[in-house]
Amino acid sequence: MAQIGGRTVATGDVGIMGAGVVVFVSSFLPWYGASFGGYHASISGWNSGFIAWFPILLCLAVAGVVAAATFGNVRLPTGGPVGPSLALVLGGGVAVLLILLRWITLPDAGSSLFAAQIKSGAKVGLFLGLIGAAAMTGFAVLRLLGSGESIPGRGLRPAGGGTYGQQPPPYGQQPPPPYGQQPPAGGAPYGQQPPPPYGQQPPAGGAPYGQQPPPAGGYDQPPHNG
Image (cartoon, rainbow, N blue to C red; front, side, top):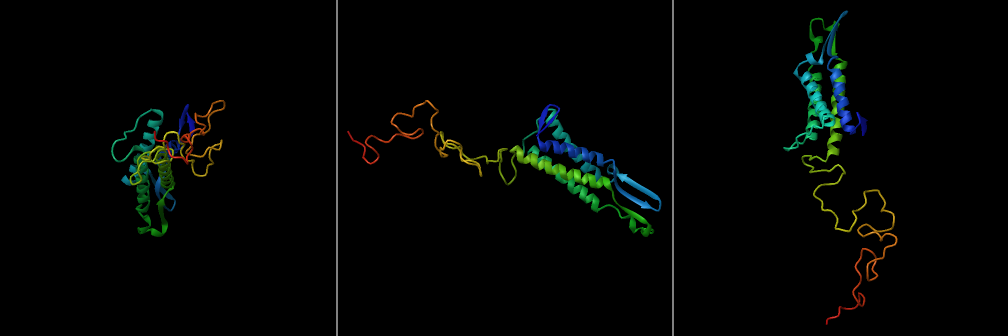
């Protein structure tokens, strides 16, 4: 958690918005360049084709949605098979794939007549944009895991790590301790009521607190039929 503008913002949301800023800055840096002799030429992400500027817009949209939900109290729609948090993950993942595709398909200026003297390839803007999009996807995954949103094929997972659909323990019984934790102080086993507070008497019959008293005459005697 982080404090931004007097608001408590989840780490995943901070990471998504920060990654959006990184992608935005990278869009104005050279994504592709070539040099010939003493001449250099380069183009930014906005001029590198659809598979460059579209993932930039996609990352900015993801960061904008998170910022609107965080600072503008905008409620994201939850209908349909794909929830808002999962949609953010998909948006970041598509942006990563498109930027990788742009990197692979950059033109090779070295295939021209002056191949020995021309140097071309991806520049710093593309690499920075790829890092930003990958970081955004990772933080979006963290946001999804902490939201309790439905994940296709895995059911519903609440933020506390349990599984929706499980029945609560019977009334008067405590849930089992989390893995690796010790039972609570007091010595009461899980599944039984703790002893009564100091100064209170146990129930009539002498039975321990949380248990039923034995039948009249003891457990070994059959009940009396009038």
